[in-house]
Length: 281
Image (cartoon, rainbow, N blue to C red):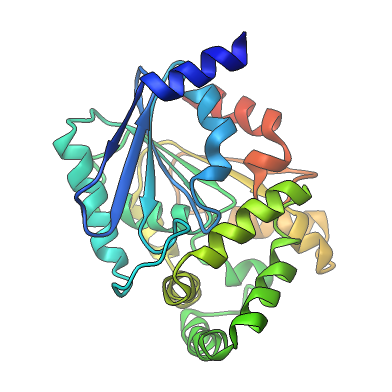
């Protein structure tokens, strides 16, 4: 009966906002608003989370064109993405929504809040960092990141289609533990616009957002995974220290590190993820 009720909820209680140049928005549920910005896995990986959260909250799921499993001829304009998210919030008269972003979506969330500190009530970052390169090596700087982003874009955009597919087949295995979810994430990335996917990754490599964290005064929760860093031989204490260093300039920050999930925490450890989100909202 519960699955039937959820299905009816999805059919009868959603709204799709389109007409924007860079985003579409699906809203679902009733109650205080949560704006969700997915990463490269797209919106489908959020389905089970939204089924739970939409019971007591109105969830607004941002779909970035070119990263949502569809082709897009327009060049990436992530500044415009943030402008249009703000425009959507204002047009829908959302009153201080919670903002939640995963990976690249969290990276955009940091910038969006630093530009509009009055817009949101709280921030939830899901395995997303202000400068992820520093998680691998604290000595890395934004200048090094810019150099790496140029090399990365050149290499990825030059790959033949088959090699590009193989690249993502290998990488997705490191991001989620379930083979069914691997396929969902892989398909979303492959069906998305390659140049947009590559620009999103390069954007994170080349920008150190840690100085922006001082502008964020709202309560923030960081939910992160240690899996990738463990496979690189980084010990638990070092991982914890580097996470804390990433967010030391946030005035009101609560950090929780998951012991077993990979990058897609909402899939690999749904119960832990939902429990910690519910505590905050």
